[in-house]
Length: 157
Image 1 (tube, one colour):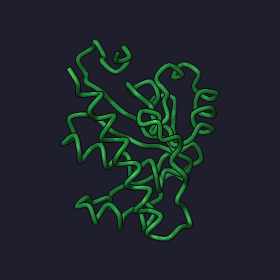
Image 2 (tube, one colour):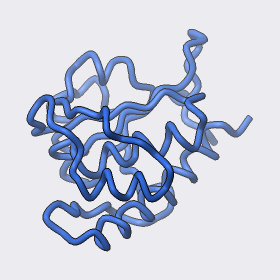
Image 3 (cartoon, one colour):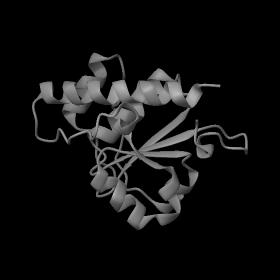
């Protein structure tokens, strides 16, 4: 059964916030993946728990997106903020520690925080930072597979 927070009553639709550490690798990949797959019918955003505001997406993340026909060149990193957690219908983190930190910082958002890969039983999405392009491709595949499952769940009527 679908959680109530996935179906807002105010008519605004569903908004998903993806959260990782620096908001330059995993969470922007997930944000752009959902935007692409849902044809932007579901609002997607991303933020980092420890981001440097205004940074471009990691070059390997940009390459992986480009290989999949997605332009991420306009992306800029940002830190997660209270208002983002308030606007989100669903908040998806990459690791358990990120989920715990997010809930500690924003306890009002606890009921809408999940791990991205929990829907597939896939555990966590490891940080590819500093890894090869192939590691980023593997990270993209894991993110894409889980985003597809979430998308199906979110759009099921």
